[in-house]
Length: 306
Image (cartoon, rainbow, N blue to C red; front, side, top):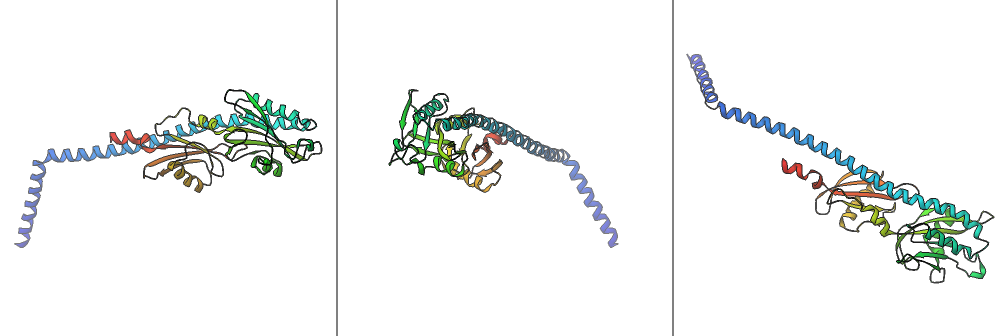
């Protein structure tokens, strides 16, 4: 009797459940359909996000490569010029006045060069004094002015552009600095050591670049509104771009990344997500090109659609 009652109770529950399903069949269909739509939408959303991310990486890598090649090609032109001129300077060492002409020609024939000089070791020409540094600089009106910069107040023999090539015997790109004597602006310098007929390093021929010239290159043709670019040296000194909180934040991550090449997602000082792409300029430089954009520029529309 007890077993019969249990069976009846089970039949009653099943009948109640069956009636409930029949009476709410439309609602159940709607709920199931909604769940399927949500699932499908989620799959589409994350697939779309993945496609956008991969496309953005490709676009930014191409953009970085274009900028890198633009910078690299300009620098290579100057490197070739100065490397060739170092041989001419060797021949001109017998006539110190000819070093003025060499500096003038380098500056005149290369519009991207702001100034150029031949800096000699102390007392190379005793009749010209302890310091002898013929320098040519391009003035704002386009004319070229000649100067002899070496003096007790301007001991170029302690400057990076002189000490590194003379010591190492190799060409060198300098860290950015303020030139208050010759170019009178912030510059970077490419310098090449010069040998005399005995094979001794006795001078340095160099070319100065205004950092504003690099600034123009890295700010060309930006794709995204939030896009910020920076050009730094291997010692993390800023060559071009704005020295702001974002730059200092990005620099923290670049210092950690040993490859100095690739793509990184970071957060800025306000917690906003940023995408950072960095590419080494290469050649004779240790420079690194940084391209930064706000993640909302990439995924903002997709998230609004969701």
